[in-house]
Image 1 (cartoon, rainbow, N blue to C red):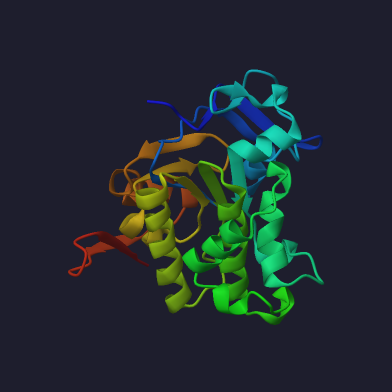
Image 2: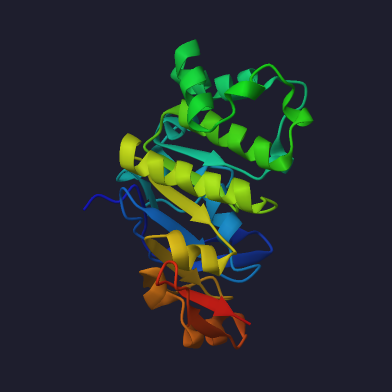
Length: 251
């Protein structure tokens, strides 16, 4: 199976601190996957490597089987798109203009593709509003629309459910599922909400505090009382949600 994102003995971080160590990660294609772990374990740092804000050692990080150190920035943007948290939003642009920015590296200006992305994310009605006039949940959907407009096979979302109410959470989950089913996308989310991962995700990687992958696999096999105790130093219990037959964490 091809892996849109793959690491080989990957180590990374900052001059003053190594954050990620000996990472061996193969992202399943066409699935909804999560990277989970405690604060400071390197989840958001890994995203910075994916978008080339940080530079890895050669032959340790691959996008679509290409060494990322040999990929130029413009080409990188055709392989992977990211949805960052809303505090990275540029000011002074309309919703339509924000989504249109997704086409920049394609050097096209296709209004119909912008409108399609707005429709997919239920944000078409906001197209003429200024981006900063929207709620955080609405802004999150607009950023996803921009990523869809970028037309990459893989979309990475950094803590996409933070600050979302239950309505926007359900809407975002449905959109991500529809993108996988109807648009053949691969979705990779940086996550903190373990119950969402247990209930809705196909695969997850659990990072330990030392920046290594503690375990990986199906969420119900990865997120266990033992792994949570070891990685988060927290004792939890599980119950079965009668509506989904999935495990749910109770503290």
